[in-house]
Length: 272
Ligand SMILES: Nc1ncnc2c1ncn2[C@@H]1O[C@H](COP(=O)(O)OP(=O)(O)OP(=O)(O)O)[C@@H](O)[C@H]1O
Image (cartoon, rainbow, N blue to C red; front, side):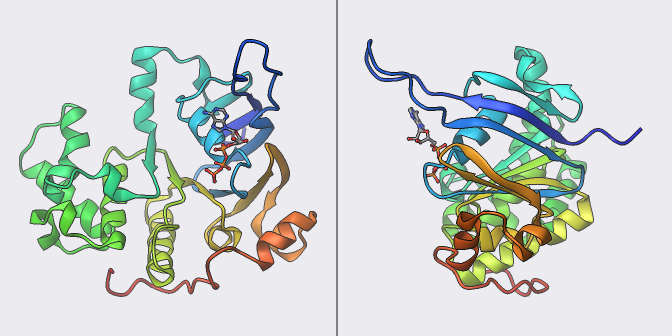
């Protein structure tokens, strides 16, 4: 029997409420999305503003109720989990968002930021924890002397590396990236994409990567899912979609990827 996928979403429908008592029922924000993410693979979810990407992510994170459909996370029926079971199971998810400065406490040292999730999980501070924290930082391409710096002293790229290190602290099975490079310069974007490619290889990470920029995500995704106005309009292996997109809309996203040139993927040099 083949291994259970890390994430399997089937016919997911998400609909916000209409405004006012007699408001017409709005069209679903996500209209029957289905996809499968195998362990160790990356799925890029792409679409322009309003296509439903954030709603889909928020539903997967259980921050938004769904109207119908199912989500299996590592073989577990994710949408029916209750309180304590959900809290425990959430450790399977690591989340990195667009702006690391909103999620990193400016006054804490990087060592304190990386220790937070471990302490919250009940691990004891001490030499083992220090070793683990130093390892996380180094895996994310920052030198050990950064441990004593504070988040407010970091560049955007460095802060995003710390946010990624913190999300990895509890060794989640699935990493979720919500526009992780869109606030960064193109050269720094490429470095962060290199880092994700390295981490995927060294840690066998499964990743969901949400972005409006198809060119960015095509470089690191095994599969792509293209959304438009709530519908999944294209889904398949990246090389096939890039070679022969079935939809005109996907072709447009490929040729006019907003805001970037082709980011150069190379082995990471000095972190920026
Ligand atoms: N809280 C809300 N209440 C009502 N409608 C909402 C709400 N949040 C989003 N929507 C609607 O749901 C649809 C999908 O929005 P969503 O934010 O999921 O798209 P997106 O692809 O993530 O866009 P962006 O890239 O701008 O974040 C849009 O039509 C949006 O107006």
